[in-house]
Amino acid sequence: MTVTTQQGATSAQDAARLAGGLITGIGVVAPTGIGTDAHWRATLAGESRLGHVPAERAYAGLTTQVAGLVEGFDEDAFVESRIQVQTDRWTWMALAATQLALEDAGLDPADHDPYGLSVVTASGSGGNAFGQREIHALWGQGPESVSAYQSIGWFYAASSGQVSIRDQLKGQCGVVVSDGAGGVDAAATANRLLRRGTDAVVVGGTEAAVSPYALACQAGRRTWSTDPDPRRAYRPFAPDAGGYVPGEGGAMLVLESPAFAARRGAGRAYAQVVATASTHDGRTTAPGTGDHGQLVRAVVLALQRAGLRASDVDVVLADGAGDPAGDAAERAALVEVFGTRGVPVSVPKTMTGRLCSGGAALDLAWAALALHHDVVPPSVGVGPDPALDLVTEPRAGTGLRTALVVARGHGGFNAAAVLRTPEP
Image (cartoon, rainbow, N blue to C red; front, side, top):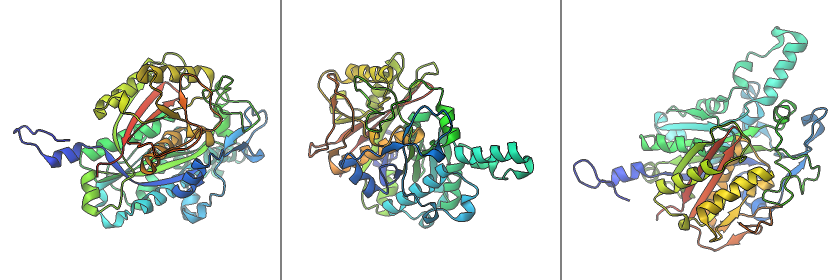
């Protein structure tokens, strides 16, 4: 791609500045594993990590019994004890995923201008368990018993702040709140920062929304599953789909401007986030209910901004609401955009549950890994759906070059991201 300047000359430097960010590092803390390798192995094996909600995470009368849990996560390996007392599990996972992503990218922030490095996270629920504990102390013991860190431990921006402080990322930082669409919206913000001159952005999202208070906040949603069988509780696009199951975890990515990646000699790039788009349904609905027109608009805008046609897309990572109305809306949107050509559609989050603002971030990681390895990741328990080519087994060696990530959030949010294999 070239850009024509006002003087009529082409500038490769401007072209690089306007290009989308390169994903050079991936850090995963999710039900599918801690670390990219473990996560990818579990993905290719089609290992569902949905299980029953433990008693200590539930409350009396809880109607959903299944969730995606991050097993074996040792916060002591990633977070200093003095920081643990100030923060919630969702921030511990964000700090861990960031460390893994930076290590994967071979990027040590100490070696670079801290004002050229930023962090943007997505958050939809904040520090649930932390807040619940302190509210319980307030109710039972009075205000003197409440931690001084209550004011920051639950706050949506806590993970961005803690990552910024620990890793000395002093550029423009922030947090995006748009539920399940948040990971894509955060990546959009990261791309804007890169195009304005930032060198690299740590971007993504994690959630820890499987705790009594967090589950109680979701209890009023008619779209969550009450099926007690982990094998059947979350089955997007299935004729008998009964809703979604919650999950915890997510992913953090290192996005670099092409110029910065070349300058520092980055070893490899998994993929490039070439374009994103976001729309809103104009009403506060569950993901995918009602008219699908704004979801179509988000996908079409993302493709237009990428300079691509629908026929260029090699795989779609679908949102997968898991309830009949939500699935119907997404199905209609995909058919309207892609027609009957049968683009492969995968819903790998069927192995983890819906991770709130961690979900789209993990989908971006899945898309980048799919392009890097030329393997379409599988879904479990989906379909059958005569209108969609749902992928239920890994498909290797199909020549993947372009992936579309579709994300929807409770409250009417829609987002789409187009990823491509980097140019050699």
